[in-house]
Length: 114
Length: 114
Image 1: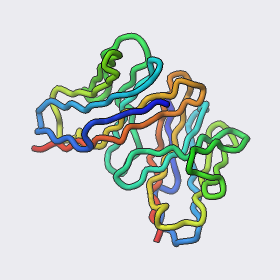
Image 2 (image 1 turned 30 degrees about the horizontal axis):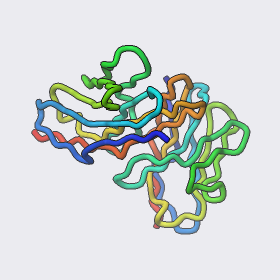
Image 3 (image 1 turned 30 degrees about the vertical axis):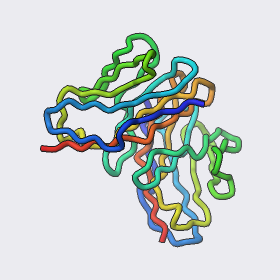
Image 4 (image 1 turned 180 degrees about the vertical axis):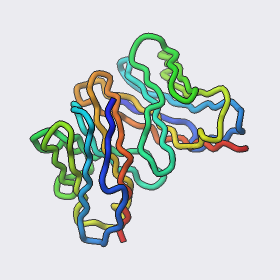
């Protein structure tokens, strides 16, 4: 298994600013993912964070708005840029060890944009 | 493309009653299936998973699920609900490729009445 931590746990930001979320895994994982969970909704995959290369984004998500880095096998960051109130959500990081595709999730970052 | 359907956005049971949360999937090949639980203000925790082998899978906190290929179902059950089971439950299916992505259902909120 893997234990995943995220920082910050929550933040309140002003419109037009950016927030960078950090995700740290306690062991090397094959894949890392970033999700958005809007209030009362399920999880929507933003992108797959690839080590040492550009992330792979899902339909509807673009690098300019959600730049992602993954410099090594245990760390990734997600930046949410040019914030608007519609970006108010929980952002979750996960890691997969491979094999069955089981993912381990971080506690999430609750973002509120004013 | 694979998909997951969870019937019932809200399920309410009395403490001590049977819990049944429904999940149906669509997949062209036998998938890997997961149930996750999300307590308020927390990330997702794996309850149980089906990969291969025995179709009745036991998980944590007394939950179990049965993979029924003929019905394309993976319903979650618990014989006796406890107040602490109140949470959001998500069924997920793994993309059967090298991406290790999970496709999530819309979630079911379980309410437990005293």
